[in-house]
Each structure stands twice: as structure tokens, then as C-alpha cells.
Image (cartoon, rainbow, N blue to C red):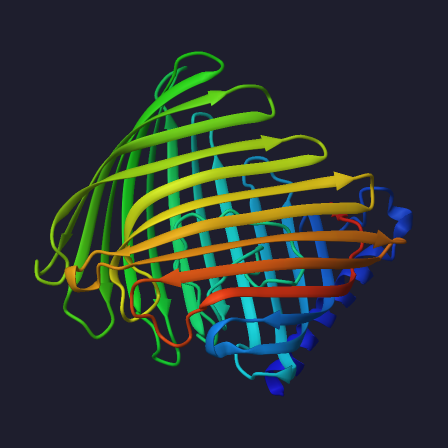
Length: 415
């Protein structure tokens, strides 16, 4: 009960603080002045009730979720900063127990922009009771917008599996002339399972990219990436190297496409566990961003250190994802998201494959100035020729949800 009360206190504190900022309306349309920071703040609070119909041993259940999300963006064009938090508490009303409790997701990004260079630091941390799927929160049915997963930490979808995932990264780009730029990046990530029912992984990655702009619409680039994976309590390690060559085109101010491909080399510390191999790595995406419509479509193919479950040490992932959000008038938002993931074991004794698909539709309607109602449907399908733990989703699962939320307009304020 204490975690629930703590979370509720945090959410209501955010609510009270934001309402206090809205109060002095006489300060003008940009919001209150005299604050130590400037920028914009958006937040919402929600209560959602879900009906979950899971295949396999998980069974059906009815759950309630209280959740909130807040995003802060500063107004400094030379030092841009973004902070987004999403979290909630889930409990079972009826049906099978499990997969309940607190979930949290926090993402922070700090940029530094110079005349011919840019540097960015970011951190992305989450605490989940199951493998994340749709939305920034990762929990189906809570009503936030689609996300575009890129090689998720847990490509095999599971329930009742608590995990902590944290990735810290840095990127540096520098202009080498009017048409050439250099980019360097690095990251470190950990995946932990408090209940010791998953593959705990440490991963380190570095990379570099050279981009050449041919004209206003077309660019070419080459990039190299190195990753190293290690596992808690094990001496085995795994490394990957890839070299990709790519092409980017701006079809219009709204539509952009990018595709890259090249060889990928995989090597394990012991050949009997992870044999050396050469494969093809691919990354392709399309984005469309208009006033009322935002769409994304992408495909990635690469190897990674694991799938989040004990039976998959070293895997090759193929991931197709798509998302579409449309603003209908001022008050109605419609969104669709979907993904297909194929995970193949690299070890010879675990050469089976797991196929997972999920998709969802949601609608959010604003009532008045502050209230919103939402409805969503999510379908998840997973099958495997490998031996998976009992927590893995098996067959077709469906989640239907309805929610009521408090979501004021974006707050803008200045120093």
C-alpha cells in the first residue's frame, strides 16, 4: 500500500504545483514570470480500467491503473533540455493476480549547441512489471501516444517479470564544412530483474558517422558501431561490429526517409556458447510530420546481447514498427501503433525463433478545458519454436481500456 500512496502523493504534488503556476493569469499569455526557469510544461493525470484477455497460463483479469505523465521543455535554444516522466500504479480488481504494482519511465536530454558543433547527454530509465509494448509508458491501455521502439531491451514479450532498464548516452556532432559533418556517440546500458527471472545484461556501445550532403534533398553517410555485452554472474561476453552505408532524402518539409545497410560481425568469448558469424545489419525509417498528422515507419535488423529471458543469450533481432497520430480538430486525437519482432537465438542449441506482433488503436477526446476521456484496444500475438519461460505471452492476448483524465493546456512561463 505504501508505494501506491507515495505515487499518489507525487502525482498530486505535480498537480498542485502546476495549478499554482496557472493561477496568476494577469501575467499574460506566456504564463507567470519571476520563476527560476523558463519554458513549457505539460502534464496529465489519468484513471484507467482495463479488461485483459491473455492466452496461455496467464488467464484473464480486470485491472485499474492510476497514472500520470509530465513533460518539461526549456526555452533555451543553445542549451535545450527536455524531461519526461510517466508512471502509475496497477492493481487487480478480479481474475488472475500478477503483473501489478508501480511502473515508472523517466527520460532526460540536455543539449549544448555551438556555432559548428552540438553535444547531447541523455538518460532513459524505466521500472516495469512486464516487457514494455505500446506508448511511452510501455503499458497497454493507459492512453498515451505511440512510440517507435528500436531494438527493445526485451524483444520477447513477457508478463509478471519485473525489470529495471537504464541507458545513458552521449552524442557529439561537428561540421567539417558546409556539406560534411562528423558524429560520435557512446552509450552504456543495464538490464536487471529484481526477481532473478531474466537475463541480466550490461552493454557498452560506441560509434562514429560521416555524413555528406549532396544537395538540399539528398545526403549519404557511412557509420561504424561496436558493442560489447556481458552478463551478471557469468564470465561469457559477446561483441558485435558493424559498418553501414546509408542514404537520406528529404522529399519535402514534411517527409523524410533514411536507409542504411552493411555487414555485422558477431563474436563470443567462447565459440561453443556464441559462435562467430557474419550477418547483415539494416536500419531504415520514414517520418512524416504535418500540422495534424504525425507518422513513422521503420525497420531494424541487428544482433544484441540477449532477449530479456534466461534461454536467449545472444540473439538476432528483426523489428518492424509503425505509428500514426492524427489530431481531429482541437479536441480529438486518434492514434495507431504496431510492431513485428522476430528474435532468433545465436547459440546452436537455442537456434529457434520467436515471433511477436502487437498493435493498438486509441482515441482521446477533450471535454471542456481540463477533462479528457480515452479508449484503446491492444492486441498482442506471440509464438515461438524455442523453450520460453512461463511468464512469456503465448498465443493471442487482448487489452481493452477506458479512462478518464485531467489534462490542462500546455503551460508556458518565463523568468
